[in-house]
Figure (cartoon, rainbow, N blue to C red):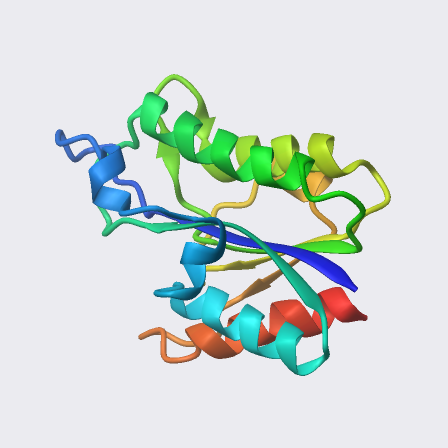
Length: 173
């Protein structure tokens, strides 16, 4: 099985006046994402590798909670992910680590926008599963674009890596 993996995580606070730019995310592209994956992505990788899946890495980017994400920064990361998806060839699934509360200037809900773009790139039959923060904001657009979501079960979040594993397990089913 060939599985697209990636992560784009930010908890946006629309009251914070300081925008979150590209430098705040410290993005890693392609195979570089294996160097320092987010905890949820680490869980996704471990579960999928244990099952012998071929991983197609796209992007790993995480910024500390802060102000609204700068549109240009988000679009650069989204396009980098989509470029790798489009050039991947045949794939069997997509497993992403997201936050669920990313707000992008002039776009709004970042996760919905990203999931819609990924769905458009992979087509209607490829399953998409995402790991999310416990207090993710899921709207109809995101739910329509993905097949399933798995959220942290604890606060404080001590099960982030486990959540990534559960997302990957669900995708494999």
